[in-house]
Image (cartoon, rainbow, N blue to C red; front, side):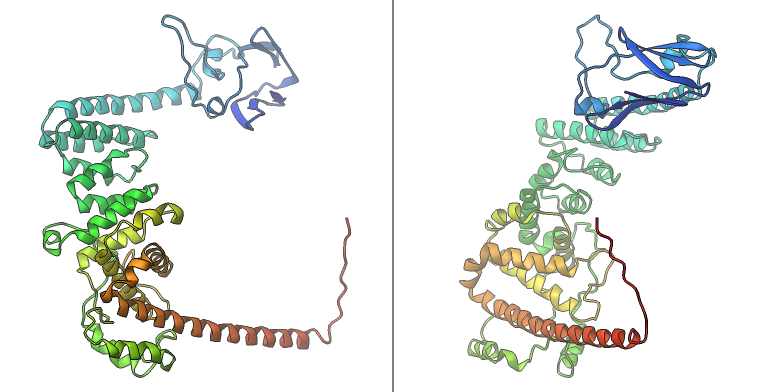
Length: 439
């Protein structure tokens, strides 16, 4: 505890947090006494006595999240000083009117109360009413003005819905869950069972939305979503509404134009007809029956591409993701690699090395996933005849990128040498003094 002129603050010196602070407009003598769980301080012409109990320090207490257990019928003492109670009791203030802070606190409590009551009513509705009625009541609840603890209330509502889903397999208020996710306040930690239910129902639209919004999805769940996205049929996706913001025009109309450009110029240092890869071309010609042809057409439909992009943009840890990638079937690994290679080719079409669209995958994300898939399944992929041409194409592409990076490094070194020459020329006739300070 430390005292300051015109202000009294109580600090937790162990965790360097301030527990409370009080302005003293009438000034003090700069002295503070503590006796019998009371603080004694001269404030103007008055001796102010403030009840305060110095308890054992803990991180939960320092952050104000300590839950005190108390026996029934006993009155729990507040861990922090309540200045308003002290003032209302006549300690430290000769003005009996409520302070501005007291009025502000009462106003906040009054605004929170309607939301608490509404959430209780909604949870009661979720336990017994129909899905349609729950959807209507949820829409009314979301129209209420939000409070600071809005995200925890939404999390409790989702948990309530999921609890009934477990007890009643036929109960699945999908529209209500979509409304709750679109509040943008949820995370996987707040409702860990939500994505599990969506995986059981194979609700790819909800899974895509969760992947786009949840920052803390476990790698096992991310990989489970990837498996569903790769195995789901295109016919099943026709009737599903999928967010297509991350997908640009992947039509084949640009294929002929790109083939003409490739015969005339390099695209970011990559030419599929480069002489440096004659060995690769010979192997291509040996087995023309391979089905995995190098082409600029997208190997998957746009809706599936949008779902895969959601996986590419999700956060992950390589060490935790790699074991789960080994469980993906070989044909799905090949398909995903073909799609990633297609995205890499699309990136190489422009100087910025980016994909068009609102939220497309980045070049680093594409390359990272290619490396992850090959690291986890290289032995299996090598044994697949359909993937041989793809692997050779990836090898040729990487080799060309190494060449262009080497040339760029040479240019960078040349520019540095020219810059040094210019600096020496400019500083030749100048006089300067350098001062070295030794401590």
